[in-house]
Length: 524
Image 1 (tube, rainbow, N blue to C red):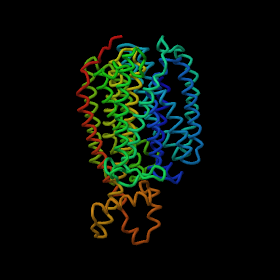
Image 2: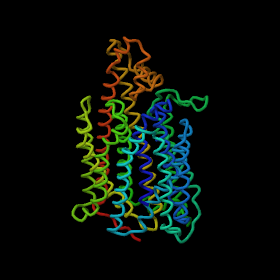
Image 3: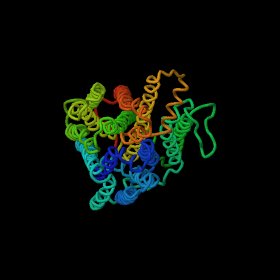
Image 4: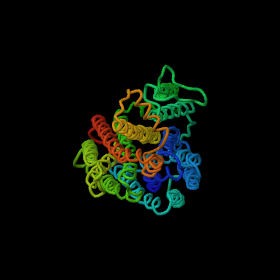
């Protein structure tokens, strides 16, 4: 289970530092590569609930073996991809589908294999292994991207799958449930529709707006902007209705004596739901931070992908140490208090990064805030998974794991899409505003927004290479005007996005107040 977690986490962290390089190699935009990352999360979110029930109905060993083979196939396709369509197929779709099975499987197996303090240690070590993956990922990915190719990051994962397949023989060959129930097809469809529409709505907000139409949205040749609204608000509505229908359908199924996809006892378990919400908001923050930070370091400060990995090293090491070696602290300090201390550390780290943002910022100067942020993540991960999974009976662990992981997946998609689009929106808006001020041109808010959209559509200028390519096409006078504008706009965008993340950290702190003081003891 630990090796599997390591591999899946390594995959995500490998590619974060490679995003600007992939933009150049595929001659595309950051938005397109961001879309691949978001689609990966979308596929996981859509499939993770039904996938989480597979160990209850089939051999755990067989489920894991098939998922790993599928994952290796997607990794192979991604490693040889010659355009973004093939990259989407291998990375986002095939790997995403396999990861939807593997993510909840790790939590489920640990829950049924350990009890009490041993379970806390197991989840703490799993979080530590996850941290090791995020530690090595940026360094390995940065080195490969800088000195060879990001494609080797995918190729190495195939070797990792081979190692894990050898150890699969130690996984239980029997299903987790003695009674083999049929798949809840209605619940599966409703959960997929709900997760897919919600996450897709989040993905569209940056380009098309939250409520009011920002630009026309076309489905084929047909424009879809009813009453001048954004398509996102309609997708949110469909998603929320689908999840409401899902809850009602599961309740009716359970009353009829049949097997629902998720038992109502899980959906109405308050300590469990408090843990799920806390875990979700933490995922939003982590996804947003790990998207904007590498782009900022490479696009503005001019660091290579390898140097970006080194800049993230203090975060990764701190999260490993504090996730793996603080599980016993709950003997002296309440797990809830440890989580809240971790949240405060995350917020302080982000505030310090905000204060430092500027042309004189260095890797050595970022060590303290990045380490503080990592300590916060480690303290949270060292407690939250065990606290959340321990709130439900062992018999419902597979379904509970699916709910926890689908929440996390939606959080990662939301963080990558919304925080990423907020970052890029501020950058493009900053470029337009500075050009208008330099030319002493006054325009209306509507005209200004049209100019921002036109700049977004005309050229991707959020990486150093594409900025240079864009500027080289201009006249010397125009080049002189734009000298420094891109850099200043990116600094402002970074500061604004860090403040947004701080606000989400405050929301996380509020959510954590609903957590139980101690690890809940569920009835077996």
